[in-house]
Image 1 (cartoon, rainbow over the protein chains, first blue to last red):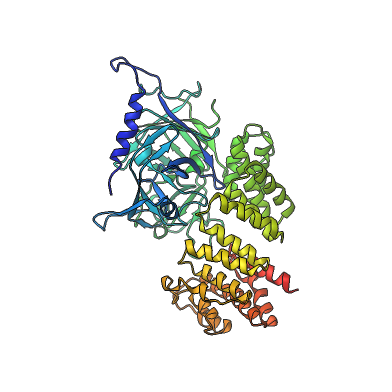
Image 2 (tube, each protein chain N blue to C red):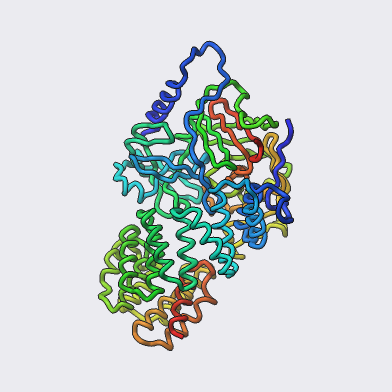
Length: 310
Length: 280
């Protein structure tokens, strides 16, 4: 599969075109490139509308993904040319174990006022996206910008990555959190966190509706020889061999952000589909949407205030 | 820097309107809904909707979700009020149209349900499950020819779904038509596994009773829930099979067992209830 090099070049070229000033002086202004309506579905997941070959598609915003995707039916409807990863043994694995190894090539995509040429989308089988959504917008595209999430007001803004360090929180004069980000080679983002006093690396994933962690890794980390009575099958799960559990954790913190009594779902590794998991919570949209976020991919920091801060 | 303290639904005790902002209440409502704490969810969504700070997009989601909670609690008048309001607020939202269609189907107002489903299909013509939903609505409304056509559209988009084959076969059988179009995609479906035996039933192989005896066994080491699901599905599709043959008593007995047997999210429950209501 072709990497998104073209996309990166194309979007960045546009971003630079807007900077009509000499670069030898510090310019601490943020340069907004696009402001999109950020919609919320019935489960609380968030999506934006992106035009693919002239057709509007609803794209789940997925900071935890790798490559952006389109559903099988959309790819068919748009008649995108199909390619397979080479060698055949190369594939993406989704949470739950689904393997994806085919992609479609779109001629033109548009996000707000930004356009890009040939772009690859991994093909997601029908039924594996939340109902009503057509694809996912993942870090292969997102990480070429700085990205702001204003969940409360329903806006997702894209900025040039060039800015003065620490000077991005423009929406409030209230205090804000500035948390160092670990950005993986695939542009997924994580932060150092603490769950009930236990250190963990937490992945920030707007594409996950809920905050989840490995059951087995939690058992190991917390030294549970026998499961505590408070560990219970999640609502709607059967009593024997449930796919998910709940446990009353007290607090998760990352940087200056603390979440009391977080609703975290514990998932047995066999149902996560990634083999033996580490003690690394995935902080999903259930927590993230309570914040106003600015992900500075370029600078490597997460900026956050409460969603209410104006 | 100040610590930003958040408090999610786990710590929040709902204490009526005006305690938290509308957006916070909205978030708590989503969490409570997910964890099936329905009364709590209703309280939070109600509080969120009473606030002026929720943007229209989120108001629509709050109405939709509260309506779904009411529907779950069988409080249909309240569900109707919310889903009507959600549809008015977001007339082209597919999720709202789908929920509205399901509610009105459950209420037996099939003309409204069909109009919603048609509108949803118009908005999202590539979404297979919308055709399947409309097929079920048509079937419950005893419009079998239209049901077969919608299930055919569904199978065109999702040719490997055995349940699509079943509903199309049932629709054709009840409409006294040739069943062979329902089996056009069978070469792409592994009928040696569930629900293959039910499809075979409609291809004139065996009886519902023999399917139940054979498949109630723990032959694949499945959990009890899977067996239970197979039994309840056999009772539904088998009940319909008996109806096609004019064996009303046998059909009633099987259909009557469905609501008590099926896990609550099985589509067969609504189908059985609607059929039983017609047979009264």
